[in-house]
Image (cartoon, rainbow, N blue to C red; front, side, top):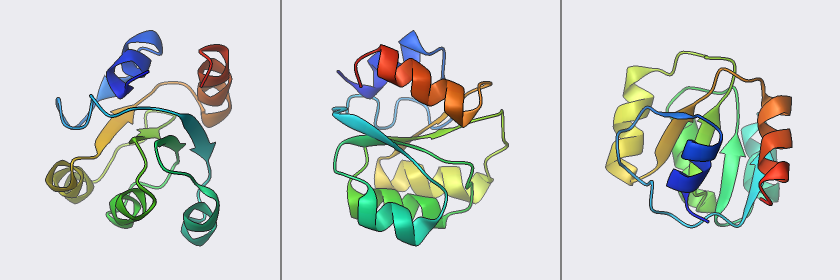
Length: 110
């Protein structure tokens, strides 16, 4: 499955245009403590987080996440989106909370 498939199925809004939408998805991780996420997230995971500052992009690149999903319609900093585009990381926006997003991901087999 690809990021664009997940975006379509979960009605997610890509905040970074077409950037990174073709990346493969093999799982998901939900967490907000960056050091914890770096040590527990896995390559090709979707990362669900309420963090919206530029450091999330650095973590996503380091761990090789497929994309970042931001729940609860939280506004993402412009500098974060610019950095994500530079690094090829899709940032997606959802009206759902993190729990609901993870449930939907699980239902989709992620």
